[in-house]
Image 1 (tube, helix red, strand yellow):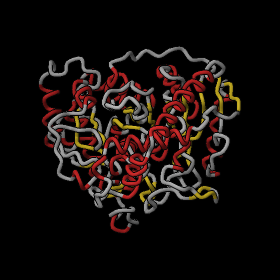
Image 2 (image 1 turned 90 degrees about the vertical axis):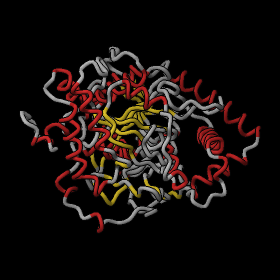
Image 3 (image 1 turned 180 degrees about the vertical axis):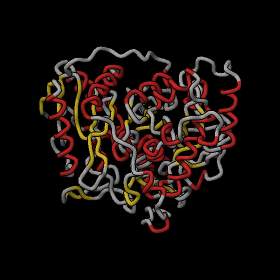
Image 4 (image 1 turned 60 degrees about the horizontal axis):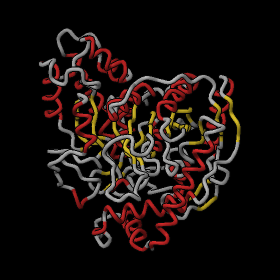
Length: 477
């Protein structure tokens, strides 16, 4: 039932979904909004945007409606739960009992788990209403969301462009207003990159902070689940629910910031460099102490690539020869299989050295400021970015190094909207903090957001009028 048809409702669907999740939650708490009403508003928006954007998969409105009605009819059900009534969907890498979970792969096209990922249980206890899953590239490999099961997720700011990845479905749905909050996961930038591409906020917590990514192998520490939202306060409430921690914010006044537009050696598209430098100047004018310099990250790319491939080999050893699996996934498995013990030991030792060097950096600075992505959203038909400013890139993860380099130190990073290119495409800045200083980083991000602003909603009226058959296809259709 559309929100406008609910007796006694005075808010329109547009007014509801264009509020922040923090505002929606307050309306739910005081009884000015019901879970059913909010679900109906999100459904109205999804029906307008999904034929073009394709962010949501395995959607079950009936199941979600039953959950919302249960929340409305029995106040003792999930009473006191911190996210009670907010609408979400789980990334399609998280096992969700009774719901098709494909990991973006035809190998698991009909897979229905019987047990939840721990994070799914945590969020259920927090009171969310789950409408389905969010699209992801196959097994989360790459920062462009497409697969042969569900197709490509398009950028709501320009459907001919990528929404990023691997949490691209979550980012696009949040930008459209089809979800209130969303979980993501991040190994080399999979929360941060799509947040930048879609004009939302994405937070990668310190490694091990959020449940659901623990590996049986002690050498695999880089993957992290984390929260995504329209603004920092939305990310804060979701992170608090994910961790069971405190929502208290430490005092932040004039952060000391190490700024690098290119990490000293990375190619960065001019449109990105201009907006990131502009954001740094805006923050400096607001009192932030900005100093330019290089990041102490020796051997970081080799370390990341080695441990990433090891993770894929340990996770998917039986799929190396499976032709149904995309080439980049099989590339990771093969590279992981070929690693010698000396290479793995060197990468683990490098990770420790990098974390120590980064920890030492925070004796003289509070934050690091860099671009989230080295490029604006790229054409949806390209599998990955092979060239930046005439610099050729060898493999599919090379263009993601502005994020992946800041994975290895193990601390928190957040992507915030920083403006739009001349073509109207969102660009994000990345703030990174010391390991364990997640609360400080979030507090600083709220200060930065007050200076830089949040991104508006994409042009929903334009999206709803698109004929998706006329759009360019993704890499796999």
